[in-house]
Length: 152
Image 1 (tube, rainbow, N blue to C red):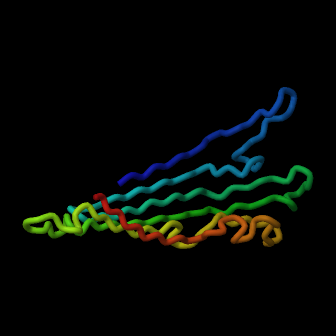
Image 2 (image 1 turned 120 degrees about the horizontal axis):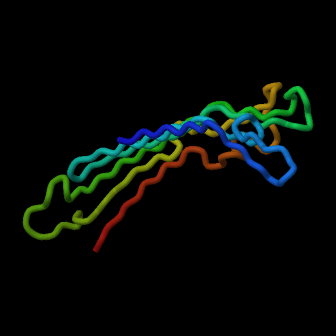
Image 3 (image 1 turned 45 degrees about the vertical axis):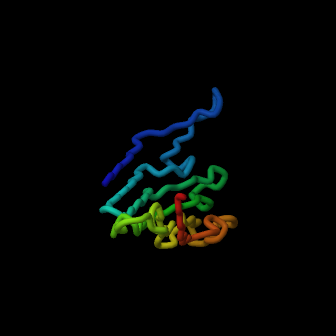
């Protein structure tokens, strides 16, 4: 198991001399201040599972041309999880005697974006800006994959 927390105290960007610095955490870039990453792996002979996830704190992108925050983009906190399982049948119950067709076979089942989440974006009035709708940001959403591997 692994759990990592990243906490950015300061993040500024200077694009050119003479121009003001951009405060990436204060709304000039939409960067999250906190990020958490989780990984859990487990298994026994012939069976295994893994879970990983990421979380990002809320962020904002200021619209400098629109004073009062009327054109700001708000990114609420966001989490995404993935899960996977695998089985190696020959390792669960080793065949007696000759080599079985199950030897060196692995079947895996993976779900990416388990809860079908995506990074939402809102304007101050609650509307979704153009180009940030659900299927424009993450057209695949949740994906399920079954894979079969056999080594000969």
